[in-house]
Length: 339
Image (cartoon, rainbow, N blue to C red; front, side, top):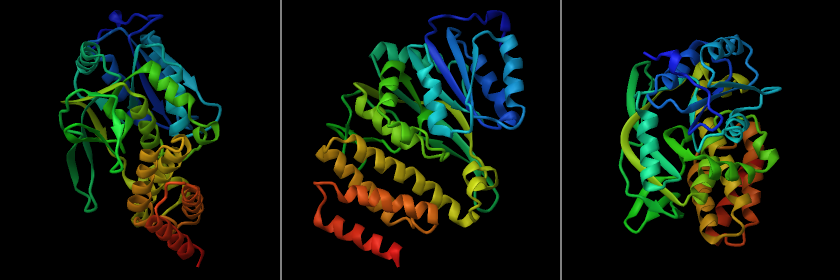
């Protein structure tokens, strides 16, 4: 159990823990406690509230009274996960930054110590780790699974292949279509990546479409990356009924998974195309993602998704590296949406 007497505010903390909140009253305290319980004390805890309608802010202010390391940032309106996480990182003062979703927690009290030591000893920009995921399956049974449970060597100047994976000389190592909460980042290059995201893109309010495109930019900017096989994080997946995306747009439950995946991949492909500077390898990544995750995944059935899908497909058709077969597939797909 933590001792609040050990909490000392630092002007130059080593680690910044960013927690984003939107109506997270029921689980916020548990998430914060998992950070306060860390044996690594030279940290700051940045909680960014995305215009909660419950009493989350009231609880945060109460927690601030016991822990001077906690800083509250409040959005002026509900801006979504992409903007809110970016705001937390841009305000981070630590050498390293780690992100925690409000309904998750750290599995080990030494999580920060382990990650810091790994990053410092190997001069790493990114350290990945294992998470335990829990959630309900389609039959209503609770299940546990492991996310990113593997070890890699240090990968210098990570490169992205058309299969959308980071590779080194030994072949496939780690997927880049990944979530931010299983990584520990050097803050300076993370901020540089955020500053390259167009403001219009950054201000999207689609919850759940934030991790994949941002992780793509971070990998491209990283000098070194390593993944360690250590379970340091626990996430409890939201049910369909509680997911903000489902609530916001009132989609049928059986359409939810497809919809969620479409938003992720549309955002991912769009950012690849915008930031690739006509790089051949990046265009191949976009081609792979479009064919596997957009053309073949039922995107476009809902009017909102259809409009976004059409836009990103047309954006890709302007790609000078597009092959004839892919161009025909996209044109055929667009024709089917217009019928």
